[in-house]
Image (cartoon, rainbow, N blue to C red; front, side, top):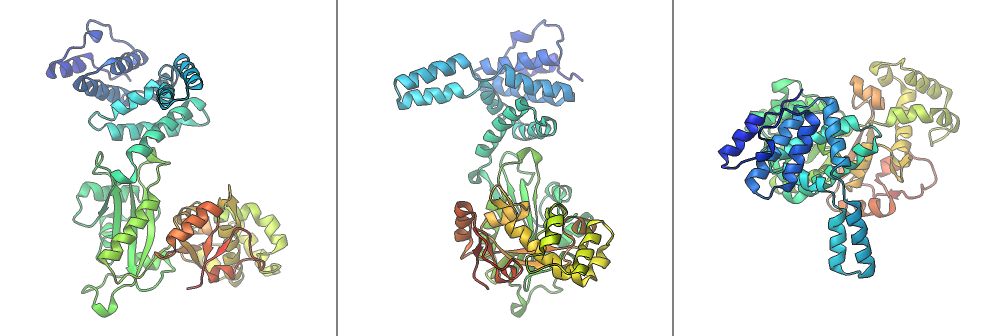
Length: 461
């Protein structure tokens, strides 16, 4: 569907006191021709007003395209607006002949394709930042293994990492007084524990809860990422009990102030920003905020899912069933119970009532969280996130999430990660530099007897 309007574009230029002779008296072209004309014109313009007007029209034109036309748009960016090979070769020769700082800068400029400047200019249009995020969302959905799309994706990701660095982000507390437009986004983007309508949302924003998000000035009404926390006494071990916790009737009294902040849900909101890291900054800044705002909070923990556990267990079970759970050879009843679990024969109540599973699954889960690796880092994505932030793997909780999703991904198990302000930086450095994982004595007792290479035993609390 071609939505390009010559009259609208010309009228826009007239309103700006400009002219655009390029498009006058030209027959209505197809989508690709409009793309080429608009983009080439934008790259030739020098005036800010005319550039913004053309950028706005390119965005509108792209949004009106079909899937095939949008694919053609990205291929045009790759094939036509790539770096000039001749200019790059000449810049290389200049650098090799005279390796000066000036020639190095010239080489860098030669390697930057014109499409980067095009994308930067699109960002200046009204709503341009969100439009580019939506473009990348489209690109990720259609990319597959196509190397052309991978190149454009890397260009967009490079720009987003610069535009969305921590220095541009604003931490905001979200409460019931926050504009409804933002509150609606919480309901839309919550993916860990679904928000069951406005009453449920209001409960999550009560005085014994907290919701914090990062916002960017270019899109102030959309949280980039948000984290939900509950203020409790002690570390929570069951997500349903946490979500159903009754609010204090008359507020917190001085002798019953909560001492623990439990982070139970963290959500990235925009798929077009996938690969841009926000979460590590967010949790750390929320902890620092609460340390000032609520000094009675003395410990910061998560109640986290283990999304890869059952998938890993199904793959590794043939070998594990022969070699044991790390604490010894598996008893026949334990093997039978895990076999039945993996065949999908057990519901939540049956799992909860199974003593063999209660004994065996936490030990198997500890092996998964600490020993299972992907490129020398923990295989589980949630573990990778929190341990990379400097948290400590504290406790594996039995039947902490009996929901269908909780049973499917982790047989009901959930994990507490502790964010200890005194050890976070040290744990983070050890994780990044030596691939060491910080974990508690309780988790250590679930692991195989010998000390595991590249594993750091955190001091017991």
